Amino acid sequence: MGAKWLKSTDCISFEVSDNVARITLNRPEKRNALSGLMLKELHQALLEADDRRDANVILLSGEGKDFCAGYDLTDSYGGAADQSSDYDPAAYRSRAGTIDDDIWNLERQQELTSIMLDLHKPIVAKIQGNCLAGGTDLAFSCDIVLAADDAKIGFPAARANGTPPTNLWFYHCGPQWTKRMLFTGDTISGRDAAMIGLVLEAYPAQEIDHQADEMVRRIGSVDAEILSAHKRIVNAQMELAGAKQSLRYALELDARAHLSTGPRRSQFRRDMAEKGLKEALANRDAPFGKGRIELRARRGVAE
Image (tube, rainbow, N blue to C red; front, top):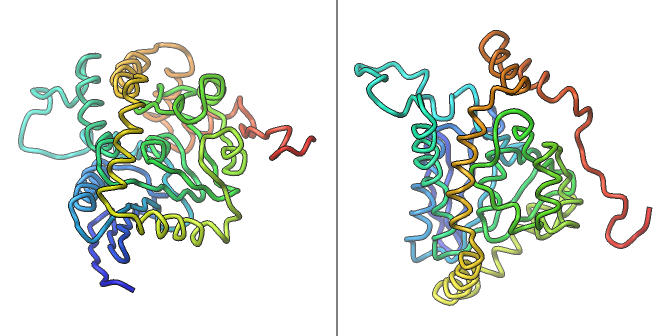
């Protein structure tokens, strides 16, 4: 066992040992929902991990039952609407009064996580429980994604709230499955996600910790400079296929979707204002029933 280095912040725990930097989303009472503070702390933790000579690989996970249940809607995508201040919020575009303001805000938010693609060190995501909306933005920005068989993966917010601002689904599972997931906002299990290429592999829930540890142990046994060469050439190939440009386009289309005055988007906004998050989500998702994709054939075994 190598020397261990530990650090905790309000929303993140960070440990380095045996060539692995372990970054853990640490708001289990909120299902690790992404607040503005968590995104900033995650950004700093990623930079720290990439800078440290005692880490060759990064493992990103969530404390408790869930990886990440999405953006914290009660935090107003970072809490700007709820912060008390001694300045006039109307003087700043962070209140998103126009579509360009919204794009500007989404760009600032995306800057905190898009760095995952640019880090020199590989990142492995370990998914258990819910990996929804903003949680998928994080997971699919990683280099390898491992999931528990019973993990719940999807972007239900696509039903009424917008389109993924960090949209890398296409690069994981192709155009048809990406459209299938986003058109309905349905979720898919970790086991079925592995079948369509959305995640690399899925394991029984009781094995996911061991399997993720073994994956990062094997990767961490390779020199950091070699790993960097591997990651950067593959990501360069993704960039040649338009990955970086598509991220910019995705957030602009998300901002456009926020302008929708259609009945579902309008109802969700009214419900949030009048009834609260729980009822707003229940009303949004009610027409979709169970909302879970179940493949007809599993790993080559016909139904």
